[in-house]
Image (tube, rainbow, N blue to C red; front, side, top):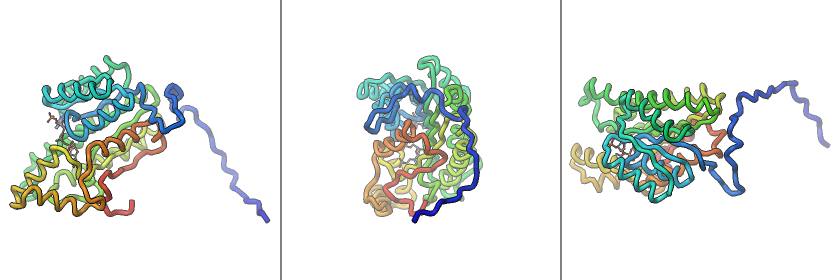
Length: 294
Ligand code: NAP
């Protein structure tokens, strides 16, 4: 026999201001359509590695993308290659993500070119691998500028533009180190935790504007940065770089280093219409390396 449940008399109020106004413009197909067609995305530090793979994935899904990095020749080449492989327009500008004026100018130029901004993926080069004893106050300040302040600069430019559309995806690239510190990566372990705290707080403050903020944490992924880290560890410990890679691989349940494309696929999902109720998370893309429950 069914018993009638007595529910407390709670009134839920519907606030239309909290609903994204322009979502209806971006249709969904029957299949898993990410709804990225027509969206405009900025991807920082994207001439190589993870940033570049993210730019390519978003462009392949139909977004117009704008990329930056410091070295103009490599940036230009990356933009041309992404444009050729995806058929989407790729805007590029040489920018150091630690330079407030250059960042501001970049956002203005992207807005002039594409007329709007929907998605912003923050990224930068990684700080050097050092032990505490070898790390100077200048090293700390430079790493704060590179990792934390660059994210603040991008957030300051991106979020008000997304607020205008009542829709946005702000995604920070950090590291598995925010879940499980990596030996020898003192600066990364310390300062990326602050970036994660920033992202989590922005997720709370901007959700009412139709904006999600999420953090993606790469584990060991095959890029130039990883080769550089292996070389630095090799110089410090006399282990061959191949032995360093073998040691990393042993820590990964998947039994292999990840590819930038595997990382980019997760970012593309978070950037999509489909991820509208994923907010304030830190998602590891690490083949299962971080052993925590959450
Ligand atoms: P990467 O292959 O070395 O590429 C770095 C990109 O960032 C390049 O396009 C570089 O171009 C650009 N860049 C560096 N400093 C910049 C600056 N100040 N302003 C603008 N652009 C800048 O590195 P990655 O492996 O893709 O790593 C990306 C981020 O993820 C790094 O912070 C890294 O520490 C972190 N991460 C990587 C892994 C991994 O296994 N690959 C794991 C965990 C975390 P320019 O030099 O021309 O500026």
